[in-house]
Amino acid sequence: MIKKVLTWLGVAFLIFFIAFNPNSAADVFASLGGTIADIARGFGQFFTNLVA
Image 1 (cartoon, one colour):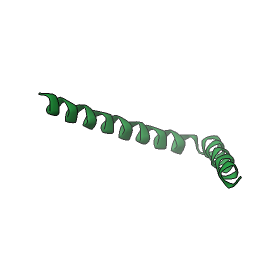
Image 2 (cartoon, helix red, strand yellow):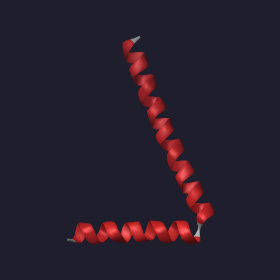
Image 3 (cartoon, helix red, strand yellow):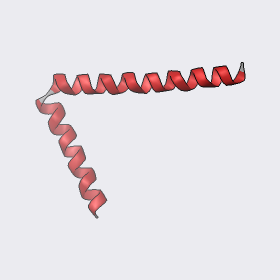
């Protein structure tokens, strides 16, 4: 029950954040995307070095 409530509160906060601060929301998501890309590059480099 609590997990469901917290999930819905998180979704509501996300919608509120995007609706009222679109520029900040875009910056946050761009930063998260860059971080995920860096992690993927790191794993790729690791496996390349492991195999080579």
